[in-house]
Length: 68
Image (cartoon, rainbow, N blue to C red; front, side, top):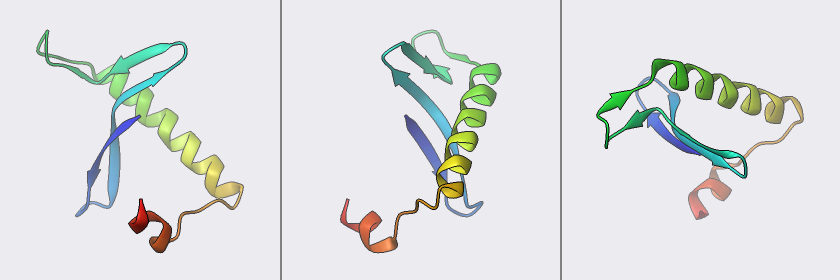
């Protein structure tokens, strides 16, 4: 997954996603096409995934994040 980080707004947005079943892009530069549906679906998936991680008590500390 590729995400775009908006520091001032303290939010992120998904740009691309791929797994063993395929891949999706929010914007296709070859076709100069933007897909609002793909953006909404991928951002919804990211929100569900992050919510689940938080509910499970998982987190990254600043020290771990900075070392990557």
